[in-house]
Structures are given as structure tokens and as C-alpha cells.
Length: 203
Ligand SMILES: C[S@@+](CC[C@H](N)C(=O)[O-])C[C@H]1O[C@@H](n2cnc3c(N)ncnc32)[C@H](O)[C@@H]1O
Image (cartoon, rainbow, N blue to C red; front, side, top):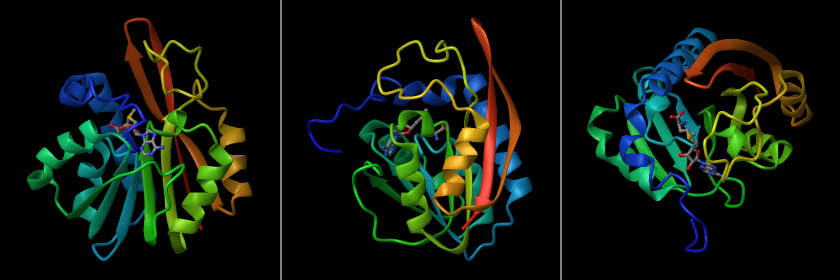
């Protein structure tokens, strides 16, 4: 992250894991990913927008290495403090994947609740495609189209969820195959109930 970029998650990082609706949602996402994708201990996986590591901690026992990429220094620091509890090799990288290149290849990409923070979705799908080995897998989870009430503060939010068909089409246009979108579950907040989907596919 360059000095001019704001760390939108600086205030949230310390208490991020304390919200049960959030941790339950990510647990549901992880369970569905593990049902859909057969990981093995020799695989190297990228978690895009890894945050405090809620998702990668559940995937870790099934893979060899996870590279956690997040733009937020504070979220990365919280993840770093949990390193001992992560059950695979872990590399933490602080970078903005929408603007900074990565010279690595992965067997799979996972991501939860990060895509709505990315402005140019077709471009990030192209980036994902380039980062994957042949037949590499994709598992991305995010909100279905919502009315804009999911976030109390919309700073850094580019999409109020996604239309599933449009989202899958953008992945297809980047070259991804065997695409499937299904419902993970719902995040319940005092002021609304928000549906969450998982897109899976491969290069
Ligand atoms: C809502 S949080 C989700 C964190 C985690 N995946 C989870 O489900 O608990 C979104 C994360 O994406 C990160 N992020 C947003 N845009 C990013 C970008 N362009 N490159 C890397 N990380 C990004 C944020 O810093 C934040 O940690």
C-alpha cells in the first residue's frame, strides 16, 4: 500500500473476528468451498483480501501453502498475530492486487467478501486467470445484489453486491470454465438479511 492509500480497515482489524454473524458467514463459505473443491497438501493457494484470515484458517489444513494478499496493514498485522494457529505454510503480502503485479503462480484462488471492494471486476478476473496454473481453481464468495445498507460506511465499497449472472459472465469472459454459483447462506443484521453466493470454477 502506498502512503497515499487509506487503510479502510484500520479501525476494524482488532475487533474484526468478534462479530458472530461475520465469523459464521465465513465458516459457511469455507465449508462450501471445501465441498466443491478437492484441495491437496501439495497445493499453493492465494487468498485475495485475506483480512484477519478467517477464511484461510479453515482452508489451511487441506493445502500446502497459502499466500495471503491484503492491502490493509492492520488486517495483515492481526493475521500475523494468529500465524501459529494456521495449519499450513503462510506468506502474508501487503499489496493492492488491482494495481500491483504478483510474479507467482497458484493452484487455486479463494476470496470472501472482498470483490465488492474492487471497482473493475473484469480486470481482476483477468488478473486471477493469469495467476493460476493450468486447471487452477477459483472460489469467490460475496454478496448478492443488496440495497446499499449492508455497510454502515460505504467508503471503499464499489458494488452493493452482485447480480449472479453478470458476475459469472465476467468470469467466463476472462476464460474461466465449469462455473457454478450457489447460495452459501445469509448474513443477518438488525436492519436486514443479506444473501451470500459462492462462485466456483477453474482455468
Ligand atoms: C470485508 S474484508 C474480508 C476479509 C476476509 N476475506 C473475511 O472474509 O473475513 C475485505 C478485505 O479485502 C481487502 N482488500 C480490499 N481491496 C483490496 C485490494 N485491491 N487488494 C488487496 N486487498 C484488498 C481489505 O483490506 C479487507 O481486508
